[in-house]
Figure (tube, one colour):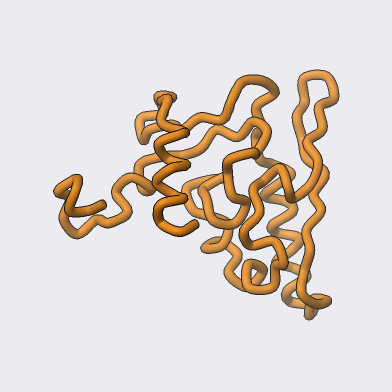
Length: 135
C-alpha cells in the first residue's frame, strides 16, 4: 500500500489519520482497531490482549449494547485465558474504566472520521483494506 500511495516512511499513513465512530460495533475489531482513542486497545493494554480469548472479535461480539433514554452504553463480557495476577487485575479495571467513559453513538452507522474530524464514507473501503491484509 505504501508504494501504491507513494508515501515513504509511513506505511500506516491511512490508519494514523483516521478514527472510528462507534455505533453498534459490527465492523470494528475490539482489540485491533482504534475503537476508543488514537491507539488500538492491544497497544494500550498489551498484557490483557495477550490474555484475551477474543482477540479477533468485533466490538458487538464483546458484550451487549444498551440504550437507556439518550445514554448509550455496553455490558462487557470479556473472556480471559486464565485468572489474573493482582497487577493484571488493575489493568482490567483501567480497561473497564476506559470503556465505561467511552462515547457511543445512539443512531446511525459506523463511520471513519478523517484526521480533521470530518466523516467520510470510506468504511467499506477500510473494511476491504483490513481484510486484504489478512485481518
